[in-house]
Image 1: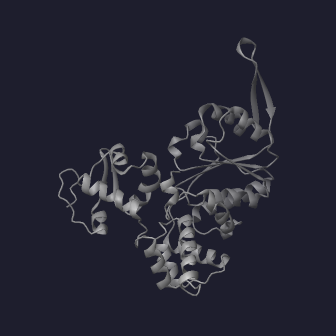
Image 2: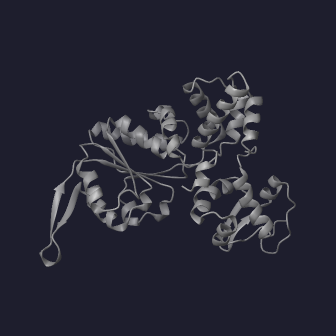
Image 3: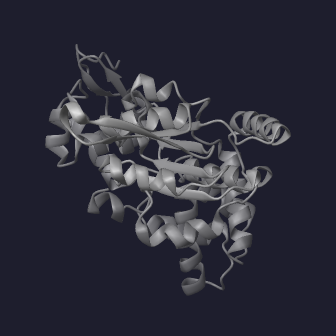
Length: 343
C-alpha cells in the first residue's frame, strides 16, 4: 500500500496502526456477521456438515475488494470449527522452506490463512498442491541424478485463501479449493447495522440520522465505515458532548472532505483527469496512471471498483471513460465526443 493510499481516510486498505482497532470490532460468530447472506448460508451448511463428520472444513477461497470481511470470515470459520488459525501472506512465503516450516507446524484441524494468495510464486504453488490434495509434503533431497523425494505426512488442515484478484490465481491452485465465495459490496442498510453495532462496542451514542450520513459515505465497505465512525466519534468528543448526531456527523465529514457519495479528493482528481485532460475518455490505464501519478494496480484495485459501482467510470477495450453521472456529480457539462457519445 502506498503512503498516499495509507493516508486516505476512505482507504479500503488496512494500515498496520488500524489492526488492533479492527480486531476489537471483529465479530466472533457467523450469526453476528452482518451482510453477505448467501456466503453465510453456504458456510453454515458446509461447517455443520464437516462437524457432523468430525472432519476439517474443505479448503476455502474468499475473493472480493479489500475491506469486505475476508479476514474476519477466516477468523469466524476458525472460531466456529474450534480450530487454531495460522496467518501469513503470499509475499511473505518466499522460499519452499518457508512454506514447509509453516505446514509442518500445523496441528490436526488447524486453519492456515494466506492473504493475497494470488501473489504466491509458482514454485511455492507446486509444493502446496500435494499438501492441499493429499495432506503430504514432498521434499527433494540432493541434486542432479542422485536427488530423491521424501514425502512427509501432514495432519488434515484447512487452507483459507483470500485475494482481491482471483483472475491471477492459477487454474490448478483454484481448482483445489472445495469452496469459492465472492464477497460483494454491502447494502446501505447493512452498513448502518454495522455502524450501530460497532458504536455500542466503542461505547458511543449515535442516532439513526447520523448512521445514515456515515453509511452514505462509507463506500459500501465495513472497513471504511469503521474508520469514519472513529473519526466522527473523535469530533463529537472534542466539538460536542460525545453524542453523534446528524449535525455533528455532517460537520465532521465535511472537514474530512468526503462528499455525500463517499468520494474524496483523489477520486475526484481521477474523474476530472479523464474528463478534462482526455475529453471524457477513452484513456488507457497506463496513461491515466502517469497523468495522476498513481500506480496502475492502485487505480485498478482500489479506486476503480467503487467508481464503477457508482456508474461513474466504464472500462472499455480502448480504455476508461467517464459517464454522464460522473459529469453530473462534479457539476460539469458533458462533452459531446464521437468516442464516448455521452449525450
